[in-house]
Amino acid sequence: MYRLLHILKQFFLILKESKKAIFISIIFLLIGLITLGSSYIVGRKLFRTSLTLKDTISITVFFKLDNTEEETNKCLDVIKEIDGVKNVTYIQKEQAKEDFERLFPQYKDVIAALPENPLPSTAKIEIDDLSIGGKIVDIIATFPVVDVVIFSEDLAKKIDKLINLIWFLFISILLVVALEFIFTVQSITSLTIDLRKMDIKVMKLVGADNVFIEIPFILLSLFSALVAWSISIFVLQKINGWSSGIVQNLLPFSSKISDVNTVQIYSVLLVFSVVMSLIGSVISLRRVK
Picture (cartoon, rainbow, N blue to C red):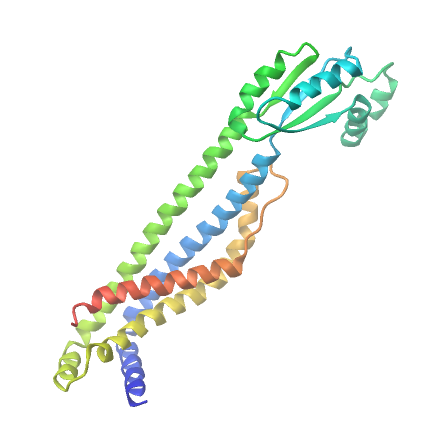
């Protein structure tokens, strides 16, 4: 009990003597946590929304108007057997007309005035791997009953590049913030050790062990990290609300923006703060031994 009280007394004494330096360290740690947390929130939403958008990319086949139903069905059977095709959804001419009138009601009278339905039957083809979409398109385009084949290959490639960029940026930010965290904690801990150099010598002379001397400094680094983490939660909560608009601007063709589990993010940041603080303080405390 005496050891605990003495450790807490030393902790508050160091806190009082080094409050300006600790305040500066909290600011730097807060900047790092906000940078890491906001990049994760925006990156996570971008990543999940991109994957969702990628799954919606498919091949659309427009059949010729003069095809018979039998010819179209035979073509559909062949398409289903192509390697890489996951699913084929057939949309008949009448269904295509109804869908068009629902999407563009202003043209309903124009369509009704025509002697026959001008819209062709179509097929929506889902594939296992977007990278082979171009090859599947080339195969389908050779079928005599097919008029036009549409595949957003460029969009699929851009989404792949975006996903890879998100991973690269997040890993880079994570490494930079981790180094910044360790450097800040190490610097402040070294500074407080220098300020109490004489007290440490006296404690060693009276027989205090290293653990007894080091724990107040470790508590100080954890205190700074926890204060920075607590403040970052309020800031990141605001950023989480704004981030959906940012993702929507970056992916304007996406109909739904994926959400993130903020509790999980805050928990990960807490663990990150504690671990990086311990590493930074332990590196500085090697001087005491």
